[in-house]
Length: 391
Ligand SMILES: *Cc1c(COP(=O)(O)O)cnc(C)c1O
Image (cartoon, rainbow, N blue to C red; front, side):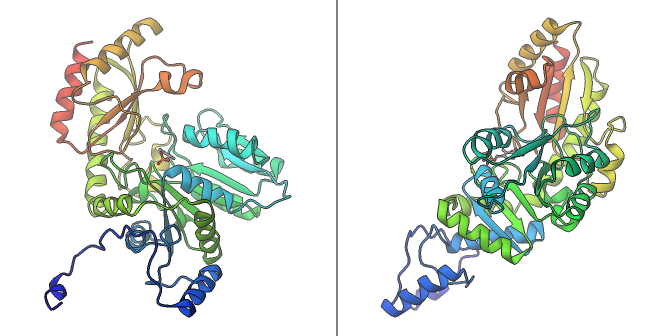
């Protein structure tokens, strides 16, 4: 017993228990009553699908990173998206929701297959005009649709358009709509949507926040107490709670998030210039390049901290056939150093060919999306440069 007092771990351990001891029937009754009233009592645990101490410790880290009043961890980015949207759904309401079209493919599928087909929600899309989301065009679409909820990302995937999120939020609020922002690509290092007034921010923590490709997790961050209550309830009712093991691993990885993201951003900026100057590359899309149409906007939104860790580029080629052939050879040449993996935000650089994934949406056979890792930049330039030279 004496000795145990010396055991003072730095981190909250993994509490795998699915249920926690309650002393007697009276305590049980009050525990369940409080739980139903959704009082957030730190240190008060009943059942791990409701609340778990390991998970709460990591949620506190996330509040710090996103500078939010609260954060809730979920099993995946999609669970976070489901929660962030579902809490605004009201039976019988026919107000539409407006989704920016250039969002994560899984979110677009969720909108079509779950929200529209199964739940009968009226979902409208906002398509970019001339490769940008112009706030005045957004205002017109809001007037047309009378949408009550808006969903967007800060940096689009895979074409890396930057959206004037503060302007969009102001217009949406002026018209009485709520705004949910998926901040996975920009990360809180570059931009904090809550500070621009967003109602909720979600992340796929599977990406940069965990950053090692071995956790699937999601998070919702917010400032409003009534939304916290609804999100806590929804997570509990449908069982979107993250596992304590995944939460613990994420908590460890979050300790190096500021370090890692700085290196991602630094490497990406250097590599973008390298690619832009290389004769085997026809075009490089990166908000940090001066010729990127949203370069000035990115400077304004990201305050000089950088432009993110993703680069999209088009391999040179006389025609579609040659581009496709070069793409396949390029991927093959890099298989041992920059592997083809359909995820992003890992410490290891990974790539994804755009056309095979997005199909007709981007019929560009030479297009490659690169998730720049935290390796020494010279090593990346050497490996990628060699693969390009061989084309
Ligand atoms: C990966 C991703 C998601 C989905 O997250 P999961 O953790 O895979 O469920 C949502 N949004 C963006 C931008 C993503 O990249």
